[in-house]
Image 1: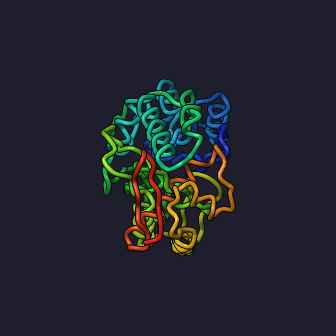
Image 2: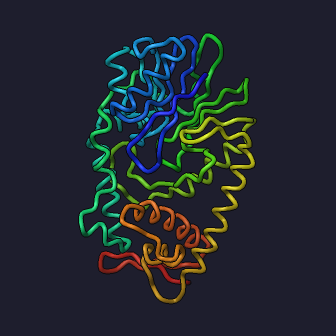
Image 3: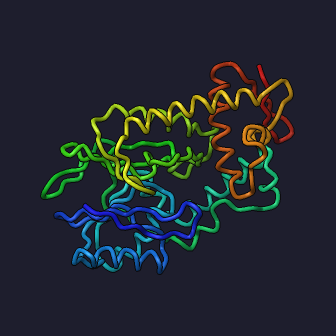
Length: 317
């Protein structure tokens, strides 16, 4: 198994793709559809005497374009089978409509919670449209499925939170996990999104609660090493997860301190917590974070939610 560092055009920086040199020859995640990303994949395979045309299986971790956007191009050259979580397979088949639905969801959420960027027509996801293409999934995966290789196996584990489709792949024999954006050395955001099946949003997604539960499930695994979607390997996954969960507790307390008797939108509360550092580019992701902690405070009875005039505000209970 080896890593290929693939460039992206976004502030997140490069993404990690992993090659499993076994039977079948497998690529885990692809990077975005761009000439630069393709050049990196070609060079990374060539270093081991392999070509794109040799790929037999492509396994995809989740719906964010930096991780799967080049899948259709690679399949066209190699004929590799695509493996992806059930639900995520439909997302990729409906592309770009699925991404545009996420964009509309983000705009609606921003407008309801007091972000002026939504009113000005700022797009969260539309700039990503050209970096992926629809692709069919040959093998839909479910939580607990096993991907077999001649020399081992990977267990499929659904870990929603960072996105609804987040999937990790566990080598139980080597106590190694391909962790995508679920466990990284850097902090990963719990991002709200509409349902994977394309259905209507019935209630506000609980992405942060899902993420905490997913991290807790991963913390209980016998894993020594996580190969993440960005950055360097995580060599103390249990300590990293414990630190992340403690950080969420501290942030919930900070958000609670920013809520008082005066009703405020989630964006106003995020600015109070972060000293005003909420830009147009970061507004949606910071809003997702703030709403996750506010939902925790609502559950605890510390905060009330007021909906009127198309806006949602929060105040101390």
